[in-house]
Length: 202
Ligand code: MN
Image (cartoon, rainbow, N blue to C red; front, side):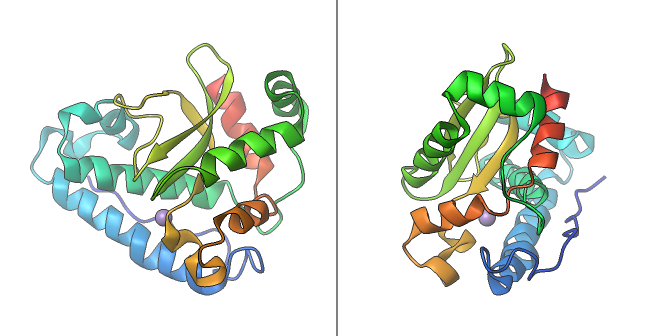
């Protein structure tokens, strides 16, 4: 078995003007494709070649650096495309909205905390909204292609929302203005998908 690059369910221009088409094309066809191919190469002939990506990540301390970087890159981007949508933005509803208010005080307060985690991640990495082992929401961030599913993560949990803060995710349109990219990211969040992941994680 090998991992395959998933198609986007929307066009490269689907997230315009918030995320530009050229960035989406390079990000999906070159970066995510590269992680996918390099993950398959790194797993070739190993015991984990038939494992799920979640199992590999949960035991990442037993794997090579190549599996850590490319397995994280494969998983993180699969999720990233799904938590964005051309019809995204607005605010969550239902149980997720209630939990966000209970945990952070308000949706705006959550937005501030999540954006700060993403803005202050030095260098390359990701910010996450996770459901932790006790069923509580938490905001966290990871370096490089690490994620909260990995056994080596400082803060572990099931991710339900992520944002890529590698420069390749925003540099063409936003150059060094990461906070502006993050503000606009909120206009494309697919809260229906995030809620689905929240319900599954609870
Ligand atoms: Mn990326």
